[in-house]
Length: 92
Image: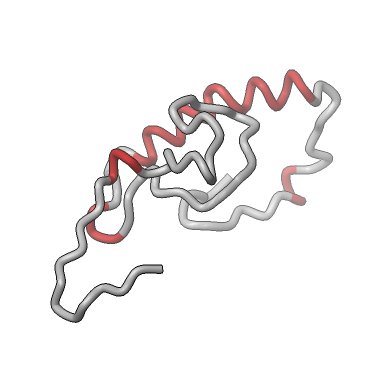
């Protein structure tokens, strides 16, 4: 760690987020099957990216077809069995 004296200003560069070569192999490329780790892709707090929902939706347009191609026999037995949870799901 680093000692930061009281009162010092700490600044970050969001453009460098997720590019630490000790944590992310080839951080410049989008890899669908990359291990899930903590990230700063959309920022944090009051500076959270307002386009994050659009980006996640765009990724879903890529991921869902890949998922269904990889597991062609996947089915949902009954929609009544689906539990819709989280802020992003307001209903089926």
